[in-house]
Structures are given as C-alpha cells and as structure tokens.
Length: 146
Image 1 (tube, rainbow, N blue to C red):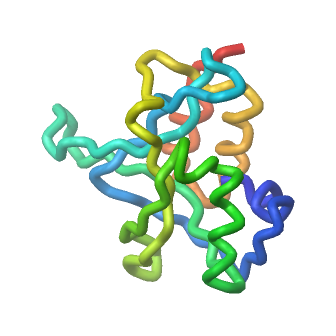
Image 2 (cartoon, rainbow, N blue to C red):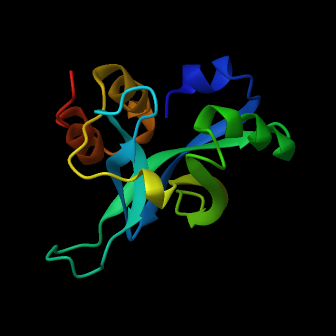
C-alpha cells in the first residue's frame, strides 16, 4: 500500500483511490521466504456470518497504472506465480466497483500464527490516506515479529 514503494518499483501511476473488498480479510499467514518466522499479507475469504454484526472487508489502495501491461512489473516483486497468484477481483471504491489485479498466496506457503516484521507492516501503514480510521488502527495494533 506504500505509494513510494510503488513508484520505486517503476510503476507509472495515473491515480490512486481507496478500495474495499467485502467478504475478504487480510491475514499475515503467508510465510516469508527470507524470514520464515514472519508473515506476509494474504487475502482470505471470510464467512458473512462469522459471528460479526457486519461483513469483514479488506481495505487497500487501488493504483491505476499508466499502461495495463505494467502489472507484469509487479509479478517479480510478489514472486508470482510461485509465492502468489495474480487474479482479477471486483473491488468497491467511492466511484463504484473497479476490476483490479490482486495477489493471493500459494496455499502451500500458508502457516498459522505468523506476524509481519515491523518494516513490512510500515509499508502497509503508509497507505493511511486511503484507509478508514478503524482499519488503519487495526493494522497499527498488529503485533510484529521483531
């Protein structure tokens, strides 16, 4: 979610908007290749009646790229298709639903009870302008591995 990191990776961004994916939750259950005790973000489907009054929703930043082929530049950073698969989902925005590429962790790399590193979490927290206050607070309260 870090706008600076997106730019550093050579992606030409036309605009960025807030996104929300109802029925999905973000978990840190994808084991890091470089730090096996650390978890990286992953989206998981969440049941609508999971004991909550409202449906869980993952939040993030939708980046409109200058050229649709630029998404291929992200695959090496996400180690796709080994660590993650890239799939298109419909994400809610203030402008209505937007078809968006997102990455889902390879099930073989999932592990329970992982925590993100402080540095990794900082990249997600850098998306603060695009997140609801409650979602940002939830991320900021996330326990870290170091």
